[in-house]
Length: 468
Ligand code: SAH
Ligand code: SF4
Ligand code: F3S
Image (cartoon, rainbow, N blue to C red; front, side):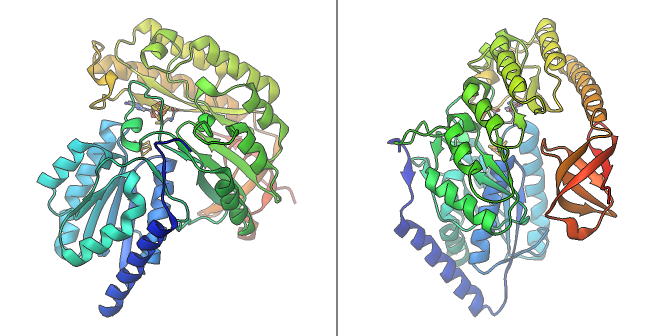
């Protein structure tokens, strides 16, 4: 384990569980069962953190509810990736003054990636007095202590100081869907892409030990889980900080050899370290879904350099070509940023041509948002917002037409899909590549892999039926 990683000890963990017990007694004396609501604003890692917070709240005796109204505890688990995400949080935080007025004992907390920014913490201290506590992701494991102090001292709690980036094993998690689970394999990021806030708010890269990850996967499978998604900001650098020699492909192969009928997905792969070994491993094991989320961000090598991405257009395309040659059925998705500072029309055209060449099944598209403290926020950016919007619309139109075409190619095929839920009168399922299928059927199929014949397609999803 690298010198900057702190592993939370058993006694530190037991101390937190003792706070859970004290909170339970607190509510026992008040003679009622308290309620809590956790709102998630960010990515899958943010959601995985929310599941841990729900696990801890349940251990403290709370019952989870679906809204802030009347809840004894409200936690806003925030995202700082774009300005818009932060504005939404501040807006919703303001609105909580009303719910608190109706329920003055309500405790409101803010955590997640926004809590990793000093300016945000200062703003909360000054302008949001109804917020009872703030904690950053590095302090998440200390939530029972923070909650106990907030309940018993009535003082506002700020657990936001820099800490050596910790790993806490053994925290309870509350997962809603027994069929699908997110498993964090690592935390933080070392890449410092020039536009991105994540390394500043989530700390340095640190990998969980493989035996902990495997034990968690085994436990999930024993409980009937059918789909495990491994999470990290850059899963391909898994293991670099561990003493033993293990990389992400080795970890994937070990999980793929566990018993049971299930699929493994993972995100996010950084193209910088996505090499042949990864694609060979994906191709070798049937339990690894033939789905790859490989963000390219820009099709222009010049812009990629300014983004500090450590690959160029050609290297990216080479990786995609190799992956497709190994897995012809591969479903590819990606992230792209339009309007990075200094992006010219020519750079933008290169992004469009890369999209045409790769033909993604779907894309997550973003307009550049300057994040205070990142290098890109102070780069010269002469392109007017209107022009960025025009590029964005043009890119989305191109991608939509590709998604629609690719989806149309599914029609007539019969694919094994995990039936994962119900929407009105229809069931929902996912193909191995992660595409959403709606189809009529019996709710006792939920949790099973069924052969679904695709009968219709739109830009976003497929429709199908099961031949009986
Ligand atoms: N670790 C992942 C992505 C995490 S953030 C990776 O490296 O691929 C998810 C996506 O948000 C990024 O891929 C990027 O496309 C987008 N994003 C990040 N910072 C942004 C910013 N400042 N403005 C606009 N989009 C941004
Ligand atoms: Fe952000 Fe880059 Fe790290 Fe992804 S790899 S989280 S985009 S710094
Ligand atoms: Fe995720 Fe947003 Fe943080 S995308 S890592 S929750 S900044």
